[in-house]
Length: 544
Image (cartoon, rainbow, N blue to C red; front, side, top):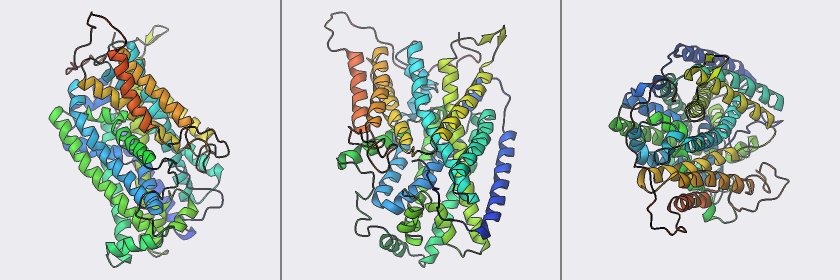
């Protein structure tokens, strides 16, 4: 989901008495983070060490960092609000997100065994050729850019919320400033450096959620039952709060729309390109399996705290007040942090600042990870097969990676500021739909079906991409509903908000049709590429 926390005239959530201390502490925290980040910068020219930390990350360390990949600012702020407003429907979304790493665990060992870490390389397991690498890079970019837009917008609006300036101009300025800071971080970081920041983010985020939840429980004499009862009473629909169907985005088809959302969230979250890069940094296959297992446990704890925070926000603040700030409830964590302690207490300032710092770290690492993975794909899959020579000067692969990172962040920042007046929450669902429809079927076929070939892969990838794009444009997420990109237009011909129910089975079908070609009647067996085997380490220079 995207952020739209501030509209003109929204209430001051922090208060003038606490704002100065919160902003000062928050800026100091940002400065320390950036100083630490630049100490982690590397000048290493070895692509293997730059991209996957020379495959040397210990299982526990990499597992905690992998859990950090799942703690994004979108989840940190959006899910508690969704639970506070929509009860059961918000909880089901949190459960889907938690289940995603369980799906990823099923493929993690196979991915690590190939020693490949971009979609283009993984797509080439059974379908060699530049076309498959280009397809992998195209899908990676189509997934990454919408995610970057959502995260950059989140950072800018969160900063505008803290300074108490609810105008559109302040939102844009804060978005640009935060985007420049994050671009600087992403431009100097490598996988090892971002791993340290990811590891630091996990305890900060867990501590922030645990603190606001415990403070809320204290108000109800440490009784979870009393807190849940108050959440129901203060909701907009007490009788339906713990029943499905309260979410305002429910499509006309009811259960089918819910199934489609489950498919997209679970499979899409599990198939993000930065997760593929992360698991490839493990020392070996057993280490990769252990890292994912650790990440599953920490991610489960994170989502459990998100759920309790959502119920606490509904019980303490009330769904009506949360919805008055934002119809999607995305101000819930800060509202809760500002209400659980007396307004003139030092503890309240500390709690608000802790939530803000957790949100900044989540946004910083999410943008850096997504950008880095996309830049690696561009460097290796799009540019890696050609020497970069201009005026007789050969540009090294790490330099191209840095330029790609800056270009991706800059383009995403420009797009984010250009559409700042529009609700863009559908972009997150679009990215997840692409990952679920293009990446998951392709990897399943590549690992499990020896007959999968180049034509089947290209049909699957580009067919899934086209279906997701067309169905999303024709869905209620873009037109015809209150929360649509174009609410006053009405050209939604597809009744579901997410295309997963159609696009994922269709992608599997296209992959089978393109590879099996049942309409061809021939006695000559077709050649198929051999099954995927662990690849040898690639040379550190450009591939020729």
